Amino acid sequence: MQRFSLLINGELREPVSGAWFSTDNPYTSQVWAEVARADAADVDLAVSAAHQAFTSGPWSEFTASQRGMLLHRVGDLIARDARKLAEMEVRDNGKLISEMAGQLNYVPQWFYYFGGLADKIQGAVIPIDKKGYFNFTRHEPLGVVGIITPWNSPLLLLAWKLAPALAAGCTVVIKPSEFTSTSTIEFARLFAEAGFPPGVVNVVTGFGNEAGQALVEHPLVRKISFTGSDQTGRRIGAQAAQHLKHVSLELGGKSPNIVFADANIEDAVNGVVSGIFAATGQTCIAGSRLLVQASIHDEFVEKLLALAATARLGDPMDAGTQVGPVTTVPQYEKILSYIDIAKSEGAKLLMGGKPASGGACGTGRFVEPTIFGDVFNHMRIAQEEVFGPVLAVIRFADVDEAVAIANDSRYGLGAGVWTRDIGRALRMSERIQAGTVWVNTYRAVSFMSPFGGYKDSGLGRENGADAIYEYLQTKSVWINSGAPTGNPFVMR
Image 1 (cartoon, rainbow, N blue to C red):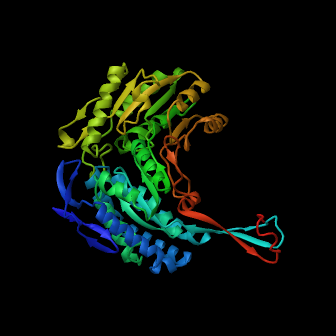
Image 2: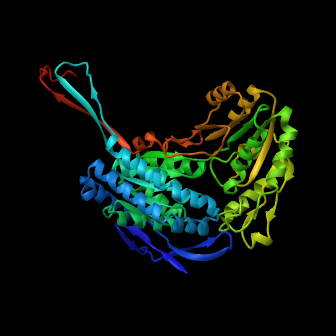
């Protein structure tokens, strides 16, 4: 049994309360580690360390170029340990080693990119309209940032937040999901090895209503960056507003994957399967609503069912496995409940629809890849995020109906469009209300391209040059270079 302590001010520490909680392997259902259960006292220690590092430690004296060099250095260390970190994530969240290894091999690029960007953030000289004044702007770090990450891709989604926050000059306290905390502790230890001063990167593990809430409400935390459900995001946003904190919220989705009659059918079928069954559907950008033009509906669904039926379930550490277990017990139960809801609403079960067990599934929490037909967009299966391998198939007649169905959702995170008509592709990209639109592909992301949601899918942007400004504030500086003082009771 392994134990994972808190990381505060550069040191591994046991929780003040002495409390621990267990974490299990979703494939074996066996507990394999104990994790420190932080509470408000631990959070206060971590935030205080981060605040001191920001205000008076060596970090506060570093130039942007020095910060960038450290980010490059930690990127090299992540690349060195990528396989070990990926295997730890598989053990903790049950996702495929092929996907986790790919993510961890890619994660260093975030630190290289933002390391290079750190000293490229420039203010501006304003050609001010008042004679005798010199006015310029500068961008300064917000301060201590609380980062709250989910269980589905812990380190990739942490990198999306951590790299720009550090490049901006902030210090951080990370609260990972209680279901997948272990890899974050190991990951964070690399920052000391890279030369980051104590207190710049801290980790408190525990539960949302204990450690998470204490982090959101701590008076020294200036920003919360959260990825997770929209219900939790709303609570965090409301709590943060009480203290006028900055927030970034990357929340849920019910993304439409839209296939037109002129699409390359084979490519589109592959894209649809990737969009919903990869990662066991446990991704905020899952293409969980499939919109198929009526004239090709039957042919397309037949090909889709044939490909989906070949998906190999089993040990996520096996490179040949294509669909792994569900990460958490509550999520497993939620997915099965939504399958029952879809049946009760009148959707037609075309494939799957029950737990998978035996054989390569072992004792893991598996749900069969599931496809429902005869779905109407008002059904709960088409409106609510399932976060599992469950696809709802909806017919549409023409472009206008496809747009209406796609936008008839409180979410707006992503969307896919499959067509050979470039004009239609561009028009659809304009009309769909989503932060990302993929054309003839799906689920592509990059450290260079901004990512975020419309509507209930969130606030702010991650990745790309836009992301660093989420952790900066702008200061305007006025210098009197010869203007008369004038009447002191009148605004200049």
